[in-house]
Amino acid sequence: MKKVTMFVWNHFTNDARVNRECTTLAEQGYEVDLIAINDPKNPVITAYEEISNSFRVHRVKRYPWMLQAYQDYGKKFLLVVAGVQVAIIPALFYISFTIMAAYLMSLVIAAGMIKIKKLRKWFINGAIITRMIVKGYFQNADIYHANDLNTLPQAIVCSKLRLKPRPLIYDSHEVQSDRTGYNKEKIKKIESFMLKFVDQMIVENHTRAKYNEKIYGFYPKTLYNYSEKYEIQDKHKINLHQIIGINEDEKILLYQGGLQQGRGLELLIKAMDEIEEGHLLFIGGGKLTQQLKDMSKSSAKAHKIHFLDKVPFQELPSYTREAYLGFQVLQNICFNHYSASSNKLFEYMMAHVPVISCDFPEIKKVVDETNTGIVVDPHNANEIAEAVNKLVSDEALRNRLSENTKQAKEIYNWNNEKVKLLEIYNQFAPLSNKEIQLNFK
Image 1: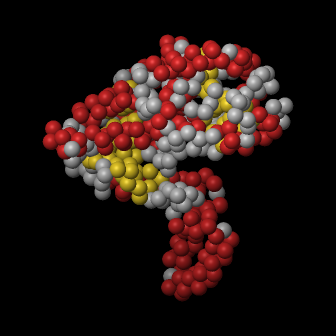
Image 2: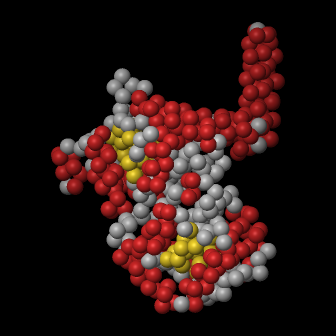
C-alpha cells in the first residue's frame, strides 16, 4: 500500500475539502494519515481518530505543558512555580552562579512567553510545527501533502530531509500572497522560496492559477472546491424553524460559513431594514460573531436575525436544505476573495437552495451559466435587499432557480472533480493494479 501523510492547520472538524481529498485517496487504495491540531477546549475531539480502515487522523497537542497548565490553573500554577523556585534557586546558587543566572534567564523567557501575546503565539506555533514534523517524519510516507502555507514547512522537512526524498504536493486553498491580515510581499518571498521544494502545486481554480503563473512563472494544477454529490432528500431532516423559534411558514435567508471580515455579513444585517419578508440566519462562528450580534440588536429587524454555532460539515446539509435562499456575498477586499469559487456556492446548489451571490468572475460564471441564483454587487446593501425581495415575492421564480440546481449539481460535484486529484497522485505515487483491486474487494 502507498502511504500518504497530509498536514492541515486546524482541528479537522469542519474542513470538508480536506475530508473529501483524504476520503477519495483512501477509497482508491492509499493509506492516508492526516496530521491536524488537537483542541484542549473540546472534549469531543480526540488525539487519534480512525475515519476508516485506510484513513486516520492524528491530532498533535496545541500547547506546551507549561502554557496548558497556566491556561488550566492560572494564578494557582504561578504560585506553585514560585514556591518551587524558592527551593531551586538557592540550591543552584550554591552549585554555580553561572548556572543560576542561566536558569533565571530561562524563567524570564518562559514568563515572557506566557504573558506577552506575540511571544506566546510564536512559542505555541513553534511547538505545533515541531510536533507535526516529528509525527509526520516517522510516518515514513510515500508522498507528503501540505494543505496551505502554514503546513508547508512541516511537509518540506518530512519529505525532503531524507536520504531518499519523497514527492511533495502543496495544496493552496487560499491566495497566500494576497489575503487580508497578511504582509503580501513577505508572504510572497516565503512562498516563492518554499515552492522550490514542491513537486506539484494545486490551487482552487483557473483564475488563481493564472495569478500564480503571473507572480511565480508556472501554472499549477486546479482542483475546484465542489461539494460531495448527494441527494438532499436522503439527508436527515431537522426542524430548523423550531430550532430558531419561528413559524413554519417563515422563509429562512441563510448564510452558512465563517463569520469573518470581508464576507458582506454586516451588509446582510443592514439589508434587513429593506427586506420585506424572511428571517436572516447565520450558521457559523468566527472573529465577527460578537460584533454581528451587537449590530443585529440595534437593527429594526432584530427579532428577525438569528445566530447558530457552526455545525459539523457532515450535518450541515440537513440545515442548508431548510433555507429559502442562501447568501454568498464576498467583498472585494483582496484577490483571495475576488478569485474565490467558494464551496458555499456548491453546498447551496447540492441542497437545491437558490443563491444571492457576488459578481466575482468564478462565482458569477457558475450562477449565470446554471441560472441558479441572482448576481449582485456585494458592496451594495440596497441591491442585496432588492434581490431578496424579488425572490421572496415570486416563489415561482425561486422554485425555477431551485429546480435548475438539480441539473447544475450533475456538473459541479466532487465525483467529477476528484479524478484530477487521483491523476496527480498517480503521477507521483501510482498504485499497482493489485493494490487497487484489493481495495475494491
